[in-house]
Image (cartoon, rainbow, N blue to C red; front, top):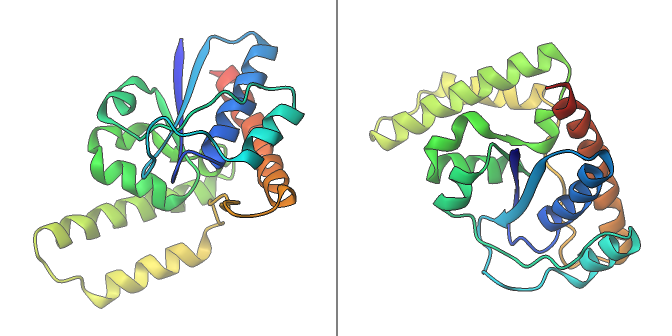
Length: 192
């Protein structure tokens, strides 16, 4: 059985929609995958947003999801952690360095352009080097900052926008984007 954890900020909008939608896809396919969601700044045991619950209900999916904070236990439980933004991914890696090999944004994980993937790996290595220098109190040379900016500008946007506070239409657009990438994830996981 695979264990998948979806992560966003408060675990009230994006990651619960991802959890609910993916659970429906997994059930339809009869796959042995357990799914959870959490937030990097979530408060435990709160209801998901009303609009996220409506979206899941309209899709005929369970909306009995409650918010959870990312914890060491949940990070260790997961085989894959799919963050909704690069900042969520970096937060997880910073606080749970043991998860570096299994943490991705959802959109980057399903990326199939090899050149883009190579640039992502290069960027992540550079970011790790910069974080190490900062933690050691070393100054970051300007050429490294420029190199990071160039890498960032060449990459697609791997963030899924936060609909929090938006209309039901905003939530539907985000849910459609999430579902598009979850379908790609399903295909990738089925291939092994």
